Length: 203
Image (cartoon, rainbow, N blue to C red; front, side):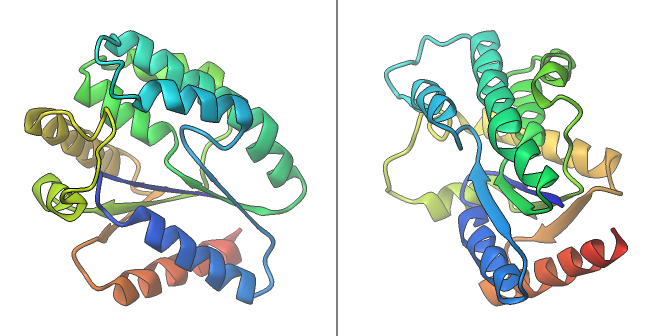
């Protein structure tokens, strides 16, 4: 099973991913945890380029292509092999992030999905957990910690990203489970675990 986590900056993805991984391992499942951009040596190097604050001159198209390149490597080197071995893969961000951040945030539209069809090689998540949080609340959670190049973007950019996630939620309800990220950590974790176990049994 392939599970992805999505959400704006500060939505609590890292915390919930760790809790789901632990819950599934306790139940005896073999879990692979990875992230985007990253997850392989090549993809991690691409991540450094994408998020480097010194790269303010990066064009939206360059950014979208770099995300797709990192994704292509991760899919072929980590995700598909793990799924073929019968393992559960949990990925922090995937194609939905590119649609929200580059398609809507950078206003590249359908070009993002077209680019990424080559990258994902038909590999789409069985379930996507979308941690839904107002962008202003997310930025408040991030607080004073050092921000990467994407996190430093304008409020208008992050509002467009939120619009992208709303569009995805409305158009892919069979795959995307939206969870209110303003709830307590334990409440969120319980809802996610229940949804994942229901999907595992269905599969």
